[in-house]
Length: 465
Image (cartoon, rainbow, N blue to C red; front, side, top):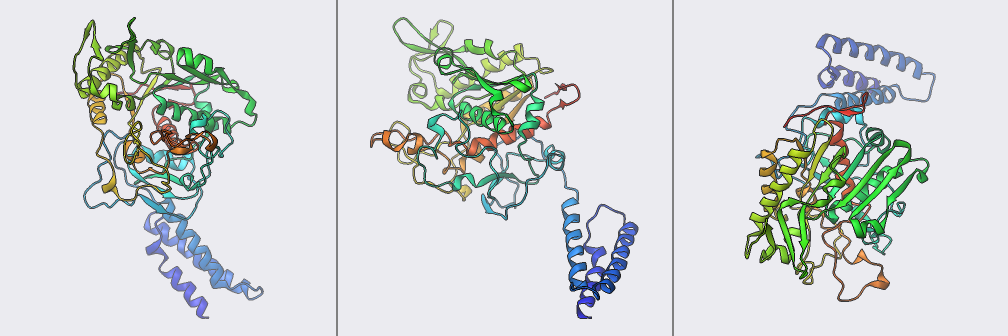
């Protein structure tokens, strides 16, 4: 009888705890049905070993849990971040949270949320997510990014997933994305950090294929060395995923005297390789921090004029405006989706890449937001240029989310142990694969789902800034 009393107490308070999106009369009607069901369970349990209260309370508990998951969410900000993720006053940020492993939400559950939140503002949660491709499974990863193959002993850096505040991102679905890309070209244009992201996506899409032989290299290492172009073709979907090397986006030239100059007023000549693409993901950043570029002496050029000295901030702004003008003049936004991926954080200790900087031994992300680096000046410049453009550009602002992940770089595991030396340069800029760039591609996938794709016509619907 005590258990039955507990049962009816649970059901008595159910109308106040249920959060189904039903009107009050329907809610009471629903609970009345539960009470009748509990009486049935009570009398039927007299002939069985199961406690009626336990059975009914379990039922109610599950229904309450389901109702809480089904309750509608409030809407907030825009899908693509156009800022550096400043938190609202009074909201605390816990960067790494340990959560109970649970199935990732489906696409239909998540897509509706995405237009109402900033998917680049969130935290890394320890969740043991299923990888979009298992470690050591993809033959297309550069050895320099293949940390486990090169002997990295820990794998906790693979256990984190990115969780935005206020919404859920859909689990990456390679087969769904390939259907979106049917008959299309997706091109990554930029430096080796975009190559990092490109390799991640090729591997993730390949993993969704039953027959892995149905993807092959259109151009290989020889073409990449001579032309700066790499391409993989997915035969069954008649689509390609390409990478075009263009670290500055504008043209670097070498004179007869072997002196290099950077033409701030001319887009790189490789633009002919991607101007007709259906999706383009641009980036530039890390090469602007290198010593030759940062000094700005006798390197930057406009027309025939070579600047004896030009601040890198001004040069970077000129180069981005040249890129923006080229996009506005050459890209049809009714046909092509344009993305720009933000600056990816580096984590060198005790120096830079060429002065003894290191990051080996890092196995956990940063947990204290005050330890993050200042927001890069390059991203503020980029955001101001994007705001002036005619062509809509989807901004993948991954800067802050990468700044937490000091544990995700190859460091000494850019090479196998037999090839290392005490003088080796550690890699604290690029990322291990599998690893952090897989999350960038999840966000790319989530953004594509909400950026005007019409599955019936397999076309993009026109969007405006």
